Length: 535
Image 1 (cartoon, helix red, strand yellow):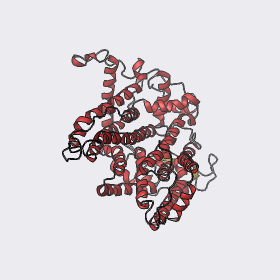
Image 2 (tube, rainbow, N blue to C red; image 1 turned 135 degrees about the horizontal axis):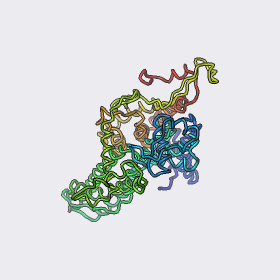
Image 3 (cartoon, rainbow, N blue to C red; image 1 turned 30 degrees about the horizontal axis):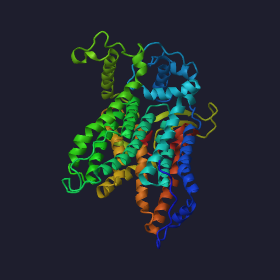
Image 4 (tube, rainbow, N blue to C red; image 1 turned 120 degrees about the horizontal axis):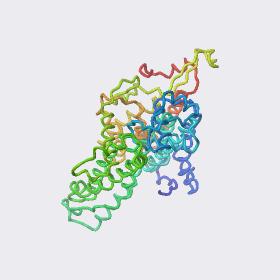
């Protein structure tokens, strides 16, 4: 990680905006610059932690799909595979009678890693408290805010802009809600984001390797400025790391496989473009046909290994669902060499795939992907209404406790506009940073458009929200312009950004009660339903 730099004084004759002058004074010494370098990300991460862990154990109930994943996680830890539970198991589990699972395998349709992450909290603190089964998800969501801040700083070279991106992620509703319920999507988001950070590290290294290889050559390329072929780089540890992170993403939910495929395409395309910029004559075939297969070997096999390792509990025990499927009917011919447990795992995956592609059951909060940019149907994870005078409710109109996965409307809707604007900016500028952020949005959103009939939900956008925050950050950077640009522009843009952040914070404060299940008056809850489709 590069050390922070002291803010340089303005060039001779260049007048800075007042805020720029004040900020330069604040960071005029190495000690102050270093304090901000570490302190800015730390502060926004601390804010995220507080918003995610405050009153985390409320409600003490298995909300929404916690009814599956928490109990699956508990039995997975004890048996190595997910077990069936008796009738009325939710009430028993919530009452602290957690060991009532049956010694029979349950049919589950998601890989184990996300449930292992949930199980860590129960392993450490016991399963009798909702706080324990949610704490690891909250910590993962907090760590994701730090990753957004670091990625933002690497993209812009500005700790302040990185903190802006992290702040937007920290206070967004879907990011907060999905960090406070023990579902899988938050862990998926974290591993996807981690992979994209590794891509940034690889880009720096790869650019330097290509430039070094090309230096000293002249007139050898098709355009007369470089060699015909560039280097085939086998040593790319950050691609291996990205592959491992995406393997972990796939081991949480299969939608991580779309990100893996998208990242592979992104790497090949960026390798080709880096070779073209370096003056390599055969840059197209060089990047696609020579480096491309090597990149595949660096990215995909490690992802597959990580994915298989996540199934260790199922593979090394005998009780998992369909664990012995291949024993009575083993593969023949070419595939007969595959160990029987792996044959059984493959057949189990065939069954899971059939389930996923055919999932069209009715759900009152289903939201097709084409509606996500408009945020027309967020998911209520929990809703409970108590009449005035009952169960201690003294609020006029009755009491409501709700958990809705609605995003911060200002962040989400302006973020969607920012994404469209960045498409235009990329066409005009070919800025690689815009391509990086848009790639993140594309691989986490566009594949869902293929499943128009499948039952999916708005809260899946938690995987998109880091890239929405980064898109807003890039628009803010463009609005500010260069540091030595016109003071009037920077002053005006700074004021606009400050107003936007303040408004976003106020909206988050307004919605926080319905993101966390706080008891509020019924009329106040009604005020949060900005669209009729939200209820």
